Image (cartoon, rainbow, N blue to C red; front, side, top):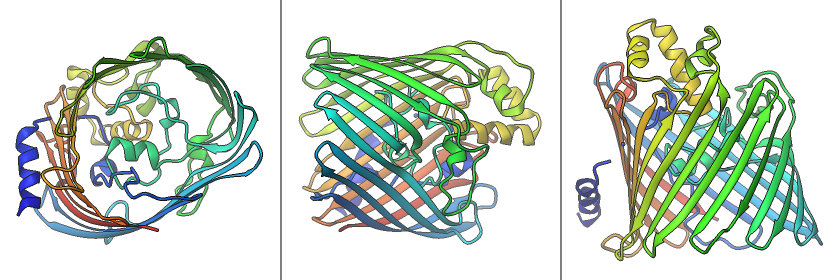
Length: 417
């Protein structure tokens, strides 16, 4: 009873909001990408079994499904200055004919790293480059586009971790309290390949891309980063990340990306070019209490997304166009609408040791729909047990109100080798 009471207490204490996910995204529940069990050595391996039950919005029908996952990461220095990294994930979904059924393998990383000098590093291979300081939406995470191959979680940390890396060459120079990074990712294929065990270079390397970033810790409380990214057929995009420690318990963050680009609807539907300078912003604050509760509130703005009038018109128009737009927004991992809020809360050792509670809410400020998610996770030395619940709410045709499954529950067991 204490286990379920903990979930109830957290859900009452936190009322929170939304980002535009595709239909496939919303069929998934967060499985917490962070490795909670201590694992030593060069290998980190876990397997995970999950059972789920969901309720279809249209008919009220109850659906059942199962998933078995194998996740492996290898990170080893094999010679002076040389290091090899490999990370792969295999998801075997049995959803009995529903979307997402079948096996899918995700090669997350596979690269060699050479540290020519203590302050000079070069990498070559498939690398998962993650940028951004926000939690719910990362405008400066330029290599997120097309990288989601198998979605077993809507948790932001899982989406950033369990995705395809891009093939590239990367160089880094380090100095006291700062660094500069440059990378080039070439075109290697023309289109994505959904094959279960395909490397899927067409998803991440459809065109030439590059990125340069620099960071410098200004004070013990302020740490900015500047980025510029571009590629074939794309105007350069400028990025800026800033974190600031307001006090011992509070961190504020700001993430911005701007540059000329067409709107999402133009890119999704191939309508007349409407290129203009567009801003994307994610800003928020995180507060940690003495009781190990961390609360995060974030506002997300997508200047390429649809405002209220355009979103309403799209929803009332062609269902095919509406579906294509939502699918495209999910692929590039951008909010479909212009204004969104994101709230996230975690409570470590919640009322008992080894029990963690997490709550997430995404709120679409344009159509007032929302996605609510709760998790209770108990840790042993080599085993995690998690219970999760998700609820998608909103008017018909709204961002979360259109999702096929209204309610989803899931039980997960993870074993660390």
